[in-house]
Amino acid sequence: MTGWHQVAVCTLAAFVALLNLAPIELQRRIVNEVVETRDVAVLVQFGIAYSVIILMHQAFKYALWLYQSWHTESTNRYTRAHLLTLYGDKSSSAEDGAGRAVSVVGAEVEKLGGFAGEALSGACANGAMLIGVAAYVLYVEPQIAVFALAFLFPQVVITPFLQRKLNVLIEERVVLLRDLGDGISGMKTNASSDPDHVVNSIFTNRMRFFVLKFAMKSALNLLNALGPLTVLLFGGYLAMQGDAQLGVIVAFISGFEKISSPLRELIGFYRITAQANVQHRMIAKWMAS
Image (cartoon, rainbow, N blue to C red; front, side, top):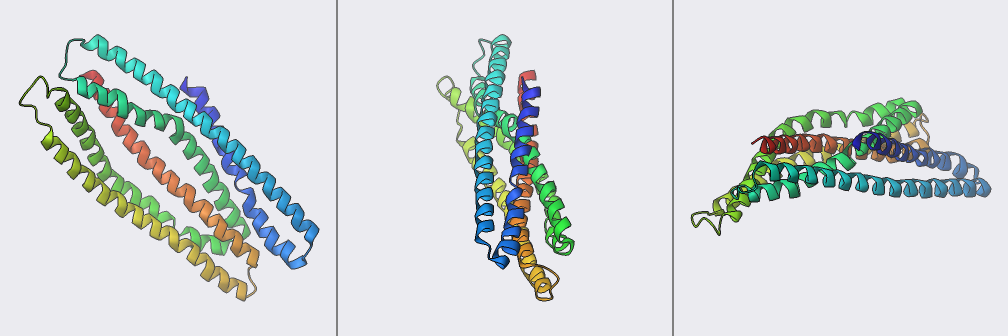
C-alpha cells in the first residue's frame, strides 16, 4: 500500500516545490527589465505569467494536501486494524493493559500515520526547493549567496545536538502516558491506583521538553534573521559599487526566504523522524510484550 503511493506523493511534492521557484526569477526580471524600461505591455505580460504560476502552484498544492491526508488516514486505518487484531489475540481477558492499548492504538498510531503520509513527501519538496534556490542564487550572484548561506549551516550542527536530548524526553513521555492510561483504567477496580504522581511527572517532562525545544527554535530563528540582513548590507554595498543590480538583491531576499523556510522544514523533518523512530520502537516493544 505504501510503496508506490509514497513515490507518487513525493514526486508531486517535488514538482510543487520546483514550481514555486519561478516567481524568484520573475521578481528579478520585473525590477531589472520592466521598471527600468517602463514598458507597460511587458509589465502586463509578466503580471499574467506570475498570476498563472501562482494559480498552478496553489492548485497542485491543494491536490498534494488531499493526497497526503488520504495516505495518512489509510496508514492509520491499516495500522490500527493490525494492532487491534494482535491485541485481541494476545490477551482478551487482561484488563491491566487496557489503558495502554487505548494510548497506543489512538494517539501513538496517529503520530506515526502523520509521519508516513506527510513527512517524507514534505522532505522531498523541501529538499527540491532548497537545492533549486541554492543553485539559482549561486548562479546569479555567488558572492552574496555565500555570505547568506553561511548563516544556514550552523543550524545543521545545533539541531542534532539538542534533538538527542529531546528524544530521551519523548520516550519518557510515551511511557508516562501509557502508565497514566493504565492508572485511569484501574481506578475502578483497584482502590490503590492513583495516577496523580504520573500527571505531575508528565508536567515536569513537558516543561523540560519545552525549555529545550524553544531554545533550539530561538537559535534557529536568530540565524535565519541574520541571512536577509547580510543580503541587504553586502548586496547594498555591491549595488553602490555597481557590481550588483537592484533586482538581484530583491530576488535574493525572496530567495533566502525560500531557502530558510525549507531548511526549517527539513530540520523539522529530522526532528519528526527522530520522534517517529522513538514512537515506532515503543509500539514494537508493546507488541512484543
